[in-house]
Amino acid sequence: MDLYPAVDVQGGRVVRVRRTDAHQATAYADDPLAVAAAFAHAGARWVHFVDLDRAFGRGDNRRLARAFLAAAQVPVQVGGGLRSEEAIAEMFAWGATRVVIGTTAATDPALVARLLARHGAEHLAIGIDAKDGRVAARGGTEVSDEAALALAARVRGQGARTVIYTDVTRDGMLAGPDIAGAQAIAALGLDVIASGGVASLEDLRQVRVAGLPGAIVGRALYEGRFTLAEALACVA
Image (cartoon, rainbow, N blue to C red; front, side, top):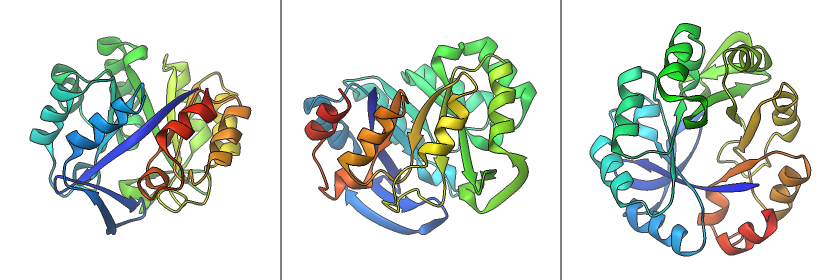
């Protein structure tokens, strides 16, 4: 099981926010590159970088993203409002190992097909944000009629292999990840990375026991609920 320590940036700083309320941000560090370097030094095999300004439609941190990828000491998974072929290609050109197709983009079958053909399934993850089992977009403030499972089944049929699944009501809330929801998607034959809500080592153990291949961890690390070394030992 892989652990993905998160570096979420807003206004150039490392922050954590509730997915459903971008205005409630807690800043944890002024230098995202230093945070990533510390994660790598502590043994992280991946880092998960998210541009929250782009995700919430309030500008972007493109220059920072480019510097971050250039300086990265471990593979970087990049997400945050990446909804176009151009934006995703840019991240690969700058050195991203895997790019997350934003939930809004993932609902466009033709776009998903083009991205998979261009970059390969091993380099892409489908972001599925959900609320009450339905696909949620734009930070969880807009909920569609489409079931998250239906979207997962469709992208699986197109050849996608990896999904990052987030219950937006849990993201940044330390309420525990939605393991049942992640398992339901995994049962379709997808590798599911659980995101949102990890608060304890026990949460990570449950993700591992559930057979999921990865988990993204943010706020719990920054608030010292456990160390990265402890988390890595837990999922090993």
